[in-house]
Image (cartoon, rainbow, N blue to C red; front, side):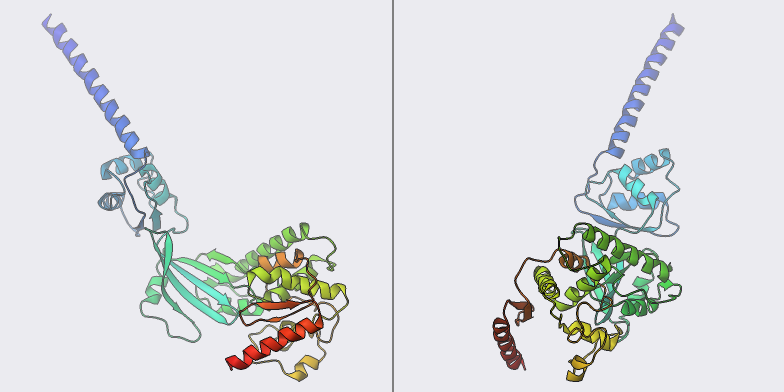
Length: 383
């Protein structure tokens, strides 16, 4: 009887222990998978050679997880404890332990920390170093300089060379293909040669995330593919009756619109002026095409056009030739492409600067001359 009693008590105790352990496992699993205690985003940096124990303790100290031990146990159970990937990770508020483990073991581009943006603009380039503020999710600019004209700021190179610094190349609307290629040659975080300058207008002004050592030719191919897609989509939905024989002609018009105005709200109006001129057999008479004929897209003119240049017959002098020039004069953005293929319905055939950064539009020559007189008066006051 005694042994039977002992065995019975042992079995009861074992069952209780199993129930308790099961409850603990269930509780730990819930803790591992449910939203965490973090109230503001944080930036977690995983260095080379980091251990899960160190990372778990860091997360616990910053209030991102309720238990460093449960985080390690969950990572071990899911066979991810030895798969940490170097990088800087934005840990969102209330991220679960399971989500954090997945994030820091999946790898890929860093989502937090420092970003180096090489911006290629019409009038030059800029190296821009930014750091993400995890609390707001916004980047804060920490350094900016022109690599051709200024010395490298102190500490810039160290930050830029970090393994987890994200790299980005951004093209501004209106840059020429020559400008893009020349700038990419100077980007020391890229590799490879460029055999030839891509055709004008075929590169999409956009922002491109790259990896250190990325091939320049591959990046240019990506820019071309993105522009082809944008042009094809806009061409499929184009307005009826446009005076373009092909998407390529529409791209030429888009490049002119891009160079004529930086005001987004008036692109479609500017496009309408040139479309109306083409339909009436009028010359386009636009300075940016003449300038391209002088510079061949190799930098800014840096001065006003001379009368001799306005009279000289070149394929790009739209004061002399009829219709469109033979090629685009820059790489237009998607908004300019959309304006060229969806111009506003207006009676305007003239426009001139109005002193605000935009333009004054006119239907008749008398109206236009009055607008020009106002602009000349504004210019005189500014001088």
